[in-house]
Length: 177
Image (cartoon, rainbow, N blue to C red; front, side, top):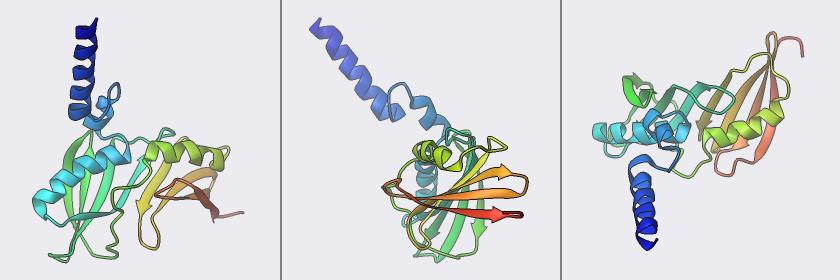
């Protein structure tokens, strides 16, 4: 009985080390949420510039806050350089040089995209398409912005505090409001 528990504990610990979580390690390997894509991108960014810090993370997401392709923009103060890493299916797919527009790091302590989408769906209400655009940046304050298509040429931008996930505001965009 005790040996079975020990084997279970070792298995769980190994799963946490290798996959990030048990039962959900596949998400870490494929980079479907913003956090998992960020972790993959960060490893690649640090190879390029040791002081690289993420400043913008965005993707077209589904109603679970997941995407097969995430854009993660980094800034290196030492090189005064901004670059974007595109993570597709859990792997680095592309690197692009970018113009430096803002360089405030999003840091490490932010709510993941799947949790934000749980909250955004409540604020969006009825949508015409089950496709969303989610972005996390720290240009003024660490915030998640989710774009919901609620009608032809009508969108809602739902804004949340990036660190806590608390609802901040909803803004209308488009024609005919």
